[in-house]
Length: 220
Image (cartoon, rainbow, N blue to C red; front, side, top):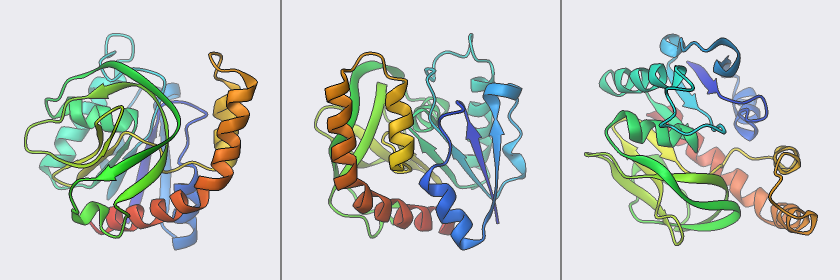
């Protein structure tokens, strides 16, 4: 088994997922497309596509996004499991015909609700507190099924073939949240402190859920 993570930003790594893979002794590599502008993940048994500051529709600015969409279509056709997180989920939706577009900003902790108990989310609770940081959303592609929905932004988790898309960030650690907040200009220090306080409460349970979902993903 070999996991390859496509990374779009130096501050958006695998986070807690890296710890889980190391604990399990599973080999993984990063493809840092923000440095190389190339996509070569075809040697992986499992592909994780991480978040990033760009939009899934900005291929003219970031040509590697087109390559990623080709990779996604090829992987789904060949039954290679993919886990897309935030931008990664939007790229899966776009690659398979769903529209991605600017919508409502979610930054911080939000509740999502399970709408289908698929094997991809087996063992996860009906209601889950998750960390969000996005401005875009997506329409579900044909032949996909919605797994979790939110009140403000409906499409939060979906599956198509062996591809799982998560609009939210299950991979967070406290250090990663603090790093991201340092780069956020449109929020007061008081608001940032509140998110950090909430993170200390909600992170342990979310990390348990991250481990469950990753186990499900690795079994696909």
